[in-house]
Amino acid sequence: MDLQNIIANNEAIATAINCFWLFVGGILVFLMQTGFTMVEAGFTRAKNTGNIVMKNIVDFMFGSVIYWIIGYGLMYGEGNGFIGIPFGAAFMNGSAAAADVDYTTLFFQTVFCATSATIVSGAMAERTKFSAYCLYSAMISLFIYPIAGHWVWGGGWLSEMGFHDFAGSGIVHMLGGVLSFVGAAILGPRIGKYGKDGKARAIPGHSIIIGALGVLLLWVGWFGFNPASTLSLIGEGETEGILDAAATLLAAKVFITTNLAACAAAITSMFFTWIRYKKPDVSMTLNGILAGLVGITAPCDCVSPVASIIIGVVAGVLVCVAVPFIDTRIKVDDPVGAVSVHGVCGLWGVIAVGLFSSDEASGVGMGLFYGGGMSQLGPQLIGAAALIVWAAAMGCILFGILKKAGRLRASKEEELGGLDATEHGLPSAYPDFMPAYKD
Image (cartoon, rainbow, N blue to C red; front, side):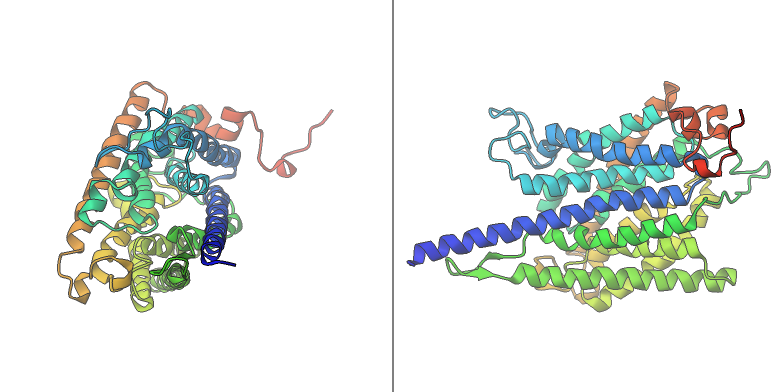
């Protein structure tokens, strides 16, 4: 076999491995839709379970089609520093409809888009009209997420500045968290959440076991979310025809930093609540796992395992402080803690890059604690501010219009009766527990 054939075979093998890697990663991220559904259902009341199932399915079915038609082009199409231009001579220049589209990448990016839309569902659960949810979920997939994604992952102005978000602490999670906060604030709290004295009342979810299973599924899914964001396992070496396994080693490191941060955050949340409330809180420990995963998502490729544990510890404290603060001080009703987990800890993940980045091979500047000064922290702070302003502005416009039109919130009767029955004609998601019909 001559040299050219060897090179061609090596390239074919590398392409096959890399495509398979992204497919597996994408499937794991898609599995996170199941996790989000179960977390949201478990942490809310049984009378809204069917509605929550429908909303999480809507995220993916609408998001997949809309992102394929326009969203992918806005995010990755040739354009300028602010936005990709999807329409061109080939109908969609650089988008999913173009003849030379990379379908592997399209699939992987589609499941990320669906994740960003799903986050908002939990914060606005139990009192949002289903028709409104369909609309704003579609808008997130259509332009809110893709435009922000273009700034960082599509070659836009933040990436040119040096802003780094490896797998989406800011682009996916913080964006969804800010939209969640704005949406929940405009929507208002659930009936009975705050008493006449203004004090918050606990509204327990109906199944901690469903919520826990959802968190564990999300944990598994994160092993696709972060490691597969390397986008390849095999690269081209410096010599033509010689393959390089540096991406494989990076993916292995990301597995470790991701897992350590999740464990550190969970341990911290458990002991924090144990000390503060005299009992280790189950739901807060579960949210601690997610907080650590969100916090490590941006810096997972450029920090050491030790730093990942520190990032996880801080995330565990942040979620334990943010949940009651948002609930009792700001008085924004967030049934599942989505704002704290995704918004607050997503922001922490973005900032953590500028503090703890230490791996020169990642191409990211040194963090503040490793002698880099503000060289990396500066772009991280600017990027975080820009993403927050974008999400908050779009959320205010979108949810404000829906509220003004009277289409955002379910009526008092619908909310009290449960959205399963009033929105979907489903008497109960658990019919075995309903009284038997009598002739």
